[in-house]
Amino acid sequence: MKTSIFYPGLAAYLAEVTQEFEQIPATRQHQLKEVSQYIRQKLNANQLVQVIVICTHNSRRSHLGQIWLQIAAAFYHIQRFTSFSGGTESTAFHPNAVTALQTAGIEIVCQSADENPVYECRYGAHFPTIEAFSKVYTHATNPTQSFAALMVCTQADQGCPIVTGAEARFSLPYQDPKAYDNTAQQSEQYNERCRQIAREMFFVMSQVF
Image (cartoon, rainbow, N blue to C red):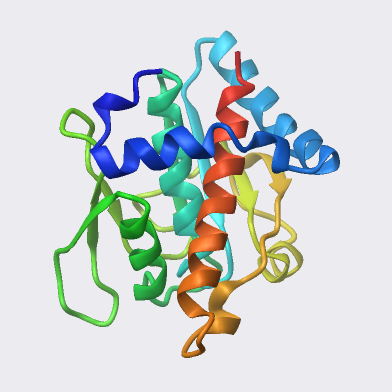
């Protein structure tokens, strides 16, 4: 894939991330490949692929997962794929997670100044904008059936035993960078979690075909 179709800073970031798959433990790779298999089967059946990335507050990890999945689909030329995000409750897309994505080279513009701002995320001039804001996974902007639920935090996975409408469910928990808010390690930990999720979402898409 030519990274030149992405914004320059992001292109450099992706060139590195896609060379880091060996950092993913074998057991984790196996879990990720299950998601790849789901996507492959849907595409082979000429069906749309819809994935909702879910964590409790739809504030950090679920947004990172949604955005990196969509960019990875573009990177690997995977059509008929859309990622979404949601939570078991609504809060706000956390500014620290926004900053981590901006550090990776994604252009993000805040479109509102309320308690739950809407952000427009852009990763290349010729790609559609990703709209990001905190919402419950059943929000009207998300699919209600024929989707896979990707659970990225243990709390949401355990607290939401049934994801209404999901035809598949995958548990891929990540450590919450929230624990480092307002500490000296804040930027480092958010950037680390952002990169880990990017690496693993790109691995998922690299294994589809």
